[in-house]
Image (tube, rainbow, N blue to C red):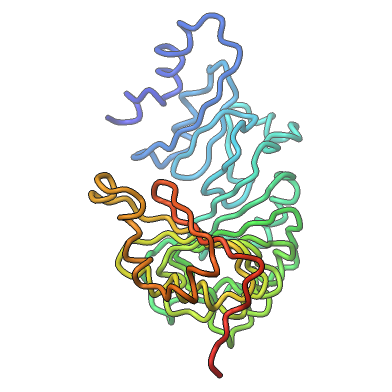
Length: 313
């Protein structure tokens, strides 16, 4: 179906869905339109629409003021178009509900302009996600993004998806002084010799990660990490779980989420996580942690009275 016939065409949306609802008072709307790359073409169908609509890039359509918490794929607010352009100029709270921002194609972003736009337009921002436009690329295919003179003090969470740490290290260290939660998705931790390690070691208190990002990585410099959620399949769990429980010096809780599989539907939690328990040193691990199950989750909660793990030097 092309955009002309789609329900997300403004004319169709109003005639087929909204006009029959005669007492409608509030309308919250967003959609990603595939196969329609022209923002102006999309908005032209909303010129006589009864509600204010915004649009940017690729095309994302949504009601204004923006009523949702997550905003995706915005480069700068100057890219936003509307069927009521005066609204973009004179409404100070268009984006006041946004707490999470997702940014793709980081190679194409002007970070200075973007961060200044964020400070002016998204006062409640708490988290930001950076992702690369290519999933697999070699270490010599990237350019380090330069430091910008804008700090975002309000938010606490950074998510890195398919990102090389060295590419983002200047941005992470100098623009995000108060971040304490780190989410990794196919983005390996920096090596212990990199500049980022002292920053992460000082600031990060909570983490979420897939196993790829942490497998065979030195995590001992993450001195303040207390809570970690790990998402992984069942193949390498015993090794990486043991590594995290013994190498993170102040870890209080490790939560493991097993990626659903056919066997997970048939068997209970103890069967799902059987390979982990059998692969751990019972005296060293089990006696120092309370172990809990809940569906696809398994949690290791450290006994505050237990001694720290000792390592050979």
